[in-house]
Image 1 (tube, one colour):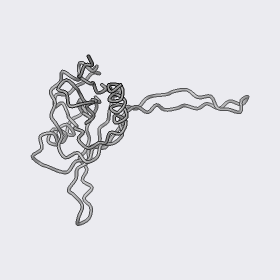
Image 2 (tube, one colour):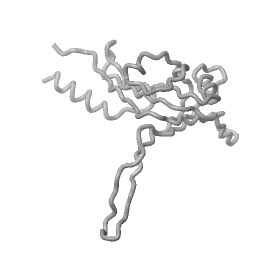
Image 3 (cartoon, helix red, strand yellow):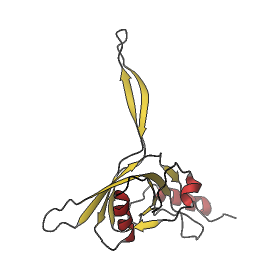
Length: 177
C-alpha cells in the first residue's frame, strides 16, 4: 500500500511543474534534416543562460473552410502545419556561450537543433531523467526591447521551427522490488 501511495503522490506532483529550473540548449552545428529522438540525443549541446521567457512550442495546423451553396455548415479540412515561432527572451550577457551561439546562428540561414530540459525528475535517483523537448529551426534577432529606468537589459530571439516537436517524457530510474 505504501508503494501505491508513494506512486500516487509522485503522479500528482508531476502535473504541477513550473518552469523554474528548466534549461534551454542549442547545438552549434547546423542540422539541415529532420532528426528523431536518438539523433537529437547524440548531438553536443551548449546551454543558453539567462532565459527568462520561452514562447509557445508545438504544432498548429491551419483549418481550411469551404462553403457550398447546398449546405448550411462549412466543410473543413486540415491544411499546412506550423511547428512554431517562439520568442526566447534572455537577460543579456555578452559572455554567455549559449547567447553567443544564438547571436551567431541568427546571422546565418542555417537550421539548428534546440533542447528544452524540464525540471521534473520523478525522484533524485541517478537513473531518473527530466522531460526533454527537441526542436529544430532558424534563429532570428536579437531584438532589444530597451524599456524604462528599472527594466533589465534583454535580448529577444525568434526561433522559426521547421520540425514537429519531439517530447521524451521523464523517466523514473528506480525499480520497485
